[in-house]
Image 1 (cartoon, rainbow over the protein chains, first blue to last red):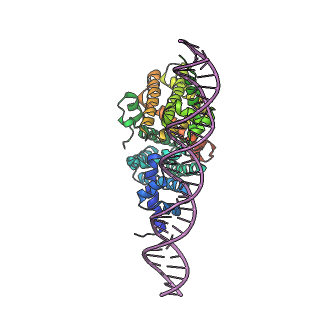
Image 2: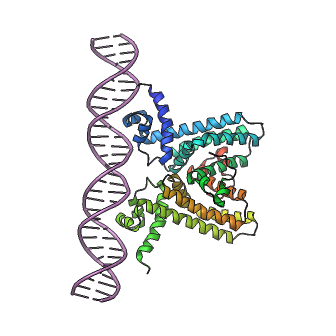
Image 3: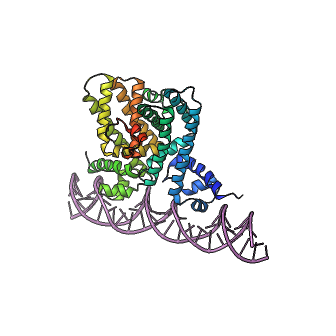
Length: 180
Length: 180
DNA sequence: TAAGTGTGTGAGTGCACACTTACAAACAAA
DNA sequence: TTTGTTTGTAAGTGTGCACTCACACACTTA
């Protein structure tokens, strides 16, 4: 079955986000992404400039999807107050990351920020999301900061599997977090 | 009977925390840890049960140091209110991670929680720290949650290098965070 | 139909790295 | 001195993986 290279890139990128999310950049062979996408490893290398190019492009796709979800969520806000808009954005984000792939990919990307290209991709992603949150919700710096702080807390909860821990300390950390 | 091997393990573990912090579990060869510790790779494998055993033990050492710092910080609190004690703990933590190694190691550990032994080590670390914070500060669940949410925000700030970004969105995220 | 262009792969190549083994030197009882 | 234990290493071994290259097939256009 044939398709255009551009269409292939899109499907490979979405596959790559899911596959890299599980074990991260260094532990994921390109063959794993290729197999999941249903094409040969060699063609992945033709479509992207090396494994790093693939990962950086996947990071772009990941943050694109997050930004779109938050932007769509803002449209569904019940009112115009910063609190209402932030709440709608938070809800949209919680819904988006229900399948964990986008969240885990972010964690994996943050872990390889010693590679400058990855660090820049992460900054670009947060730049897009944070500027939108700040301007659209007309929220204060403190509110924006809190929004992202609790977003990062979600990363810990999911990676450490704290939802499954019944002990009081874990219940405190997960209290009120909208569920995956 | 105290052997030299036990002393070696301690120095190797502290070295391992620093070395793994830079590039993470999968991207760090055991030879790098051995070289930094000044011993042969073969001896590292004799002291620890494989690379994974080394990493898990290093995670234990990492969280030990964090817990000790926070416990010591609590002793220096200006008063007995939850806010004052939490503030002292936060200050002690901020001071501890000034050199970034302990913070980055936590990020790396969170990224390889698909390995069950690592996930358990991370949970054990947060169990120790969170239960202490909750009981020692007599803080509410919401206060404990906020304490860790802003701690996780520090991870993002440092990994993405947001202190170096002069744009408004980055200033909002880093505002008031103690010198990372 | 022939040539050109874009899509796709099988079969390598070379190297990095986790882990092992065989061996050696220091030290301690016997 | 001999025997045993502990600390330490040099030199492998096997494997997995990033990346390449020669080649083939599909589709278009002259």
